[in-house]
Length: 172
Image 1 (cartoon, rainbow, N blue to C red):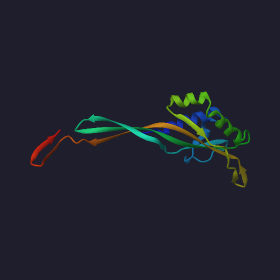
Image 2 (cartoon, one colour):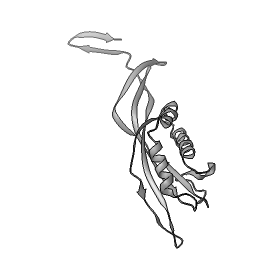
Image 3 (tube, rainbow, N blue to C red):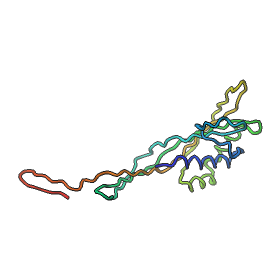
Image 4 (cartoon, rainbow, N blue to C red):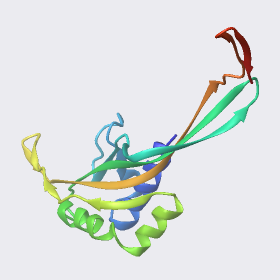
């Protein structure tokens, strides 16, 4: 199974290292801790989508069972929103993220965490009115891939016995 929490931690670390956001200001989009008072970013990691076809291998397991080991690549979308404070614009911060996404240093960090880089979307302006003031907000999607592994244990057919055409037979 893909460890989505571990992926989120790697991405938060990347966002913090590239932008001028403080340690506490990159939060999960569904976090219920309230809105920070300074500039912040939100991140949401979506479930992976199958790319191509999964492969599988079989392994004999105890008690007349077989383990089916499935493996395949998943494309994962990560949505990042950056909200402005008075010092640096959200556009500036998001531009830093998008331009750093395909850099070698970012690739090295992601590769060490077994995450591959695909591409990013354009930067979207989602500025809106909040409490009678405009809040600057920029959003972009980042597409990554990771390997998914899953093991399913099934009962094996160990013996078939029957009688056909007047002949008794057993298959082991």
